Image (cartoon, rainbow, N blue to C red; front, side):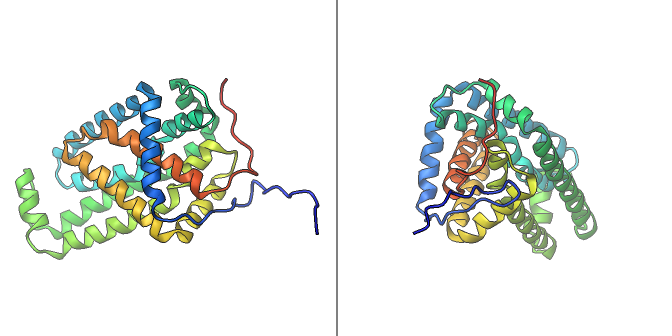
Length: 266
């Protein structure tokens, strides 16, 4: 029997991913709620900032209605990146330490280069998507959209294919972004890996757990929809819940035992 030394995973190679059963989704939500309660105000501060940012985005979009659907869906694109601080708080709790706002700030500083490049990519994707949305509605909707009722009447319920096509395209964009970010962002916060490695790991985790990740995506969609339905106020609690729960999803899905942890301030 070979008892040679254990070979560490290279930082240039994706770490192993685990097969996780769909019921684990409920476990992630439960653990996320526990982290939210234990983290306290630093966690809720993330929810407050996202709520305010969402209200500002909607207020701006209301001035030009074709921006609204693109702005809302664009927020879904960059949402995982905004949860960076929440991952750091859950990481701190997992290590048996008291979470601090400083930990959330350190997460951005320690992974600044990788997170900046990745964040820039997501922002560009969101901006491009907003532009595409505006063009689609401008060229295919033959009506003046000046009020919320006009948007519902001429875009959502008129039976035109434009809104259906936009919905399908939005779903494809959201699905791709979900597959690329669901594991990669918390992995970049937690371990010293390259952006490419994190992206490949995320895609592999989704590919090897399609049913589980579909359930997880539906939960994120439901939580986001509920937050929007409550005039963004739901984000106060639901956004930090999604962030903390996403950390536990990452920890279940990826074996990072052979990767070097990122070091934060003591």
